[in-house]
Amino acid sequence: GQLTAEGEVAGIRVRSYYGTTGTITISGGTVIANTQTSDGKGICAFDNSAIIISGGVVKANTQATGSQGIYAGNGSTITISGGTVTADTQGESSHGIYIGDGGTINITGGEVTANTQGKSSHGICGGSNSTITISDGTVTAYTEDEDGYGICVGNRGKLEITDGTVIVDT
Image (cartoon, rainbow, N blue to C red):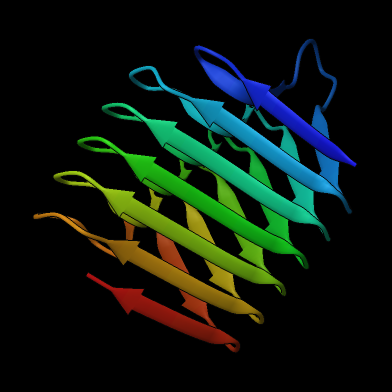
């Protein structure tokens, strides 16, 4: 099946409330999430929640300043172990995949592609105290305009690559 979600702030959003943990799990089918507003997010996890992708096709598209295709912030985690994941962003300071303060992304399989177009836009970007781990799969990070990075981390952030294929094109 296919799920297509479009929203002003986020196409698909999960958040933990009152001590509960929110989780989005995608294991098959096709999921398309779109947003076209400033600071919008295609698929996002807030406040210690999780996005787990183990199969299927996931497409997150954003078209505005400061937007992110896939976002995990405030201690949230993204785990990608299979499937095909594509995050496309257009707009200044927009990122394909953004891991906010204290967030984590673990890529252990599948195909992940992050494409950005816009000044100061990054393919995969980690904020302060974030962790980006790539231990298998194929990761392609592409950015087209000035001051953009394929993969970057901020203050006290960590990037760990132990296996897999990583292609960065700027």
